[in-house]
Length: 174
Image 1 (cartoon, rainbow, N blue to C red):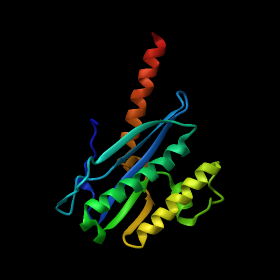
Image 2 (image 1 turned 120 degrees about the vertical axis):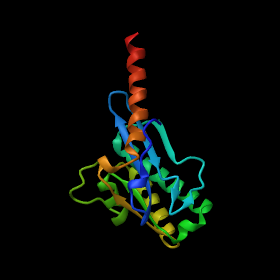
Image 3 (image 1 turned 60 degrees about the vertical axis):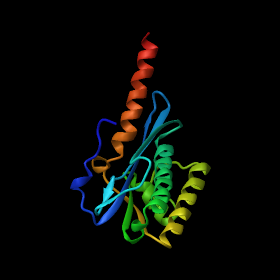
């Protein structure tokens, strides 16, 4: 990735994993992105990489937002195993999808949430909710909302999807 977030400007009171999903309706593809700092409070974070992005064939943006949160939890689980000092830290999974944050926290859709959730979405959201509850028994972890312009993971999902879109356009023009 050419645009690595500058985590140095973020205060170190909380360890953050940023997640985001993106969807392009013209090509029916979506992407997810996740990232976190390479070091925290003077410790190097032991991980195979500090960012992740992947393209998926999908039906909509809500699929990608849910998959991004799910991937963020998978990454967090790995980080907790490899970085024991994180047990004492406040950890936040940050997403720019406030409807999903609310759904995961409350276990149900809010009246102002106009998204249409399929049965598969609901099952995944319940799995995420249960996994988060399980982690909260031993760790100070929450999922919270962050505006898109502050979400460091947005670039990881958007740029890979934009690149794929441009490749498809070039291929169709020839």
